[in-house]
Length: 351
Image (cartoon, rainbow, N blue to C red; front, side, top):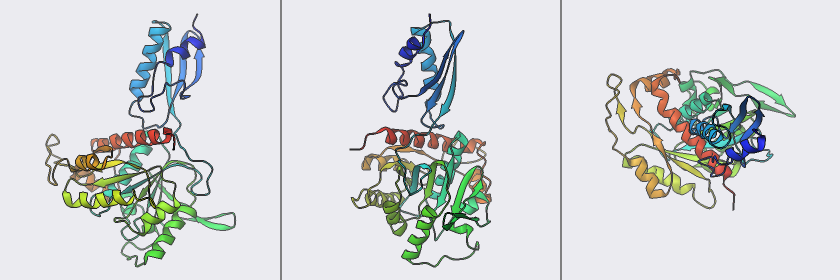
């Protein structure tokens, strides 16, 4: 007779490949039902899990080998994004905060942040995107949005309500100023604006809040380290040495004891150019393999390469990124890798 104990004993032989524990111990097997067929929920730590098909197949194989080779097995794959955050006055409804930085402008950092947010949302996560680049906000353009965010009363103060596009909550100083208006502020004003974006904004319940950092190692980065409980940081570079030099400085800053934040890894953007009319060709116009070398030199994980394509650039400029196009596939792969790293970070005991 098939029993719950036998099924769970079989599933205890299936490990999560990243968390290095079995699915039963991790509490990832839920709502187990046994009848003429076996059904249960497989609750992953992120909807962007790159291993879900492998884990489903491993569960079915374990049951057929150890319980009944002929039994039908129905597995409903769902997710509950992991977090280590406790009740906190800062971003209380946000499970994970991921900052995207570079140390240098012009490497496509905002494109990576926007695409990562879109890819996580497409995978099924709830996502917010904060444009912290006060001097050069890019998010409004890339989402084709211009209206100012509304305000609402919350308790004894007015708070900002992010606008929504493509299922993502957005906030940028670019939504509060004319498109051609220069933001001429000194450091204290920049820090004050960033604090308001964090403390006085109704972000609600989010699996991931992506923060697009400005270039450099200045006021926003310091305020971020003091104010925000970061899950991790992503460093963006192009393959060329001039970009990697500034990325090294950014990595060095986030490793200082006074600023220290976990770094999830390095992304190499514009790794190669792919012509729209010849997608099988790759042209390494900025050099080759620089991001991977930077990750190796600094002891960080390499999160992947992203191509430079004219069609995707045009979509971003028009505020109409098509997440169903084949141009978006590398960003879905990046989101899966980032989500995997976040799950590992959240499962690692803090010393």
